[in-house]
Image 1: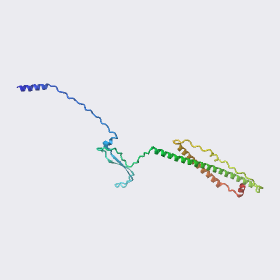
Image 2 (image 1 turned 45 degrees about the vertical axis):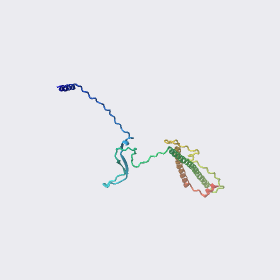
Image 3 (image 1 turned 30 degrees about the vertical axis):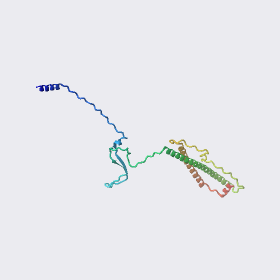
Image 4 (image 1 turned 180 degrees about the vertical axis):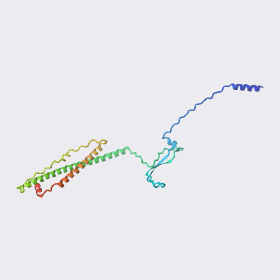
Length: 249
C-alpha cells in the first residue's frame, strides 16, 4: 500500500512540473569570396588552347570545294581541379613574336647613329645643291652668250650685204651677254630654308627635308636650262666662214 501511494505522489509531482523552452542558437554565415585571377591557376588549371595555321586544302569528302587558308584553334586540355599546384604557366597560342626589351642605352645609341646619318645625308644634299646652282648659273650665262652671238651675226650679215667690198673690216664689239628672264631666278645669296614643317619634331629632320626639297627644285631647273640650251644650239643658224672670220678678228 505504501508503495502504491509513493508512486501516485511521484506521478502527481511530475505532472505539475514546468517545461523548459528550447534555446535557439544563431549560426554565423560566412560569405563566399571570389578568387583572384592570379591565384586561380593554383586552384583550377585553365584550359589549353593552341592555334594551328592551315593553308588551302580540299576536303576529300567534298572534292568540289576548296577552303581558304585560315587558323584552327584546338582545345588541347580541358579545365580541371589543380591537385598539384605549380607556378602559373602562360597560355600557349602557337607561334608568337618574342617581345624585345632593349636597355635605354641601346635606344640612345641607335638614336644618335640615326641623327648622325641624317645630318651627313643633309650635308651631302646641301653640297650637291650648291654645285647644281653653280651649273645652272653657268648654263644661263652661256645661253645669254649664244643669243648675243646670234645678234652679232645678224648685224654682220646686214653690214656685209650693204658693203660688198668693204675697205676695211670693222672691228666688232665684244658680244655682251644678253639678259634673259632666267638671270634673276637665282641670286648669290643662299636660299632661305623652308619654314618649319608641321608634324616634324626634330630640327635635324626639318633641315634634311628642306635640303631634299631644294634638291628637287634645282634638279628640275637644271633640266629645263639644259633643254633650252640644246634647243638653241640645234635651231641656231650656221656661221659662215667669212662671218666667223670677222667675229674672230
